[in-house]
Image (cartoon, rainbow, N blue to C red; front, side, top):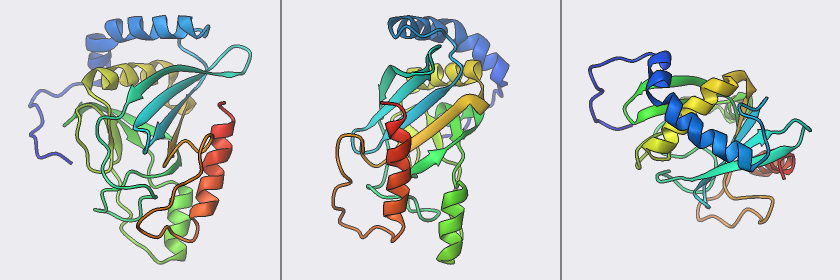
Length: 211
């Protein structure tokens, strides 16, 4: 994480929503209207593609279908293709996650905390007797990161407001090495773990639901 000191002012989620909510909601309302989906939707899926450096926001429409609402450029994401294995490897995780909380006092403006490690990560680590998996993975503002996704301050504001309006229980996050709907996982310089095929089948299955 950054060594940049936190602002001494401490904010609540409500205060941040009051500060950024009006402008962010105007942007979301336009995007949702263009996609013919009511705002806020019943549920959303955030889809991060590491190679494409893209974060898609997909929302559930009234007919139950999933519609692409907006795409954000990932400005910073350290590491390479492949799952996160341990603390300090600077890898962005790969898998299906929840958003655990909203951080109104992030070192990187605002952030959404990713529920890493998930049960799959923990199970594979236990089988391999790996400890110290790391954590504190965020989607946040700014343009640099160590194992997180940096999307810029304005995008972080919009995602923060959207997540609050939709509700964290109604958000799924898919982090994929590449868009497995349109291409296979490329060869990597570093060997992938033996369970990578299982992981990528699960990710591809989730991605297929939001075509």
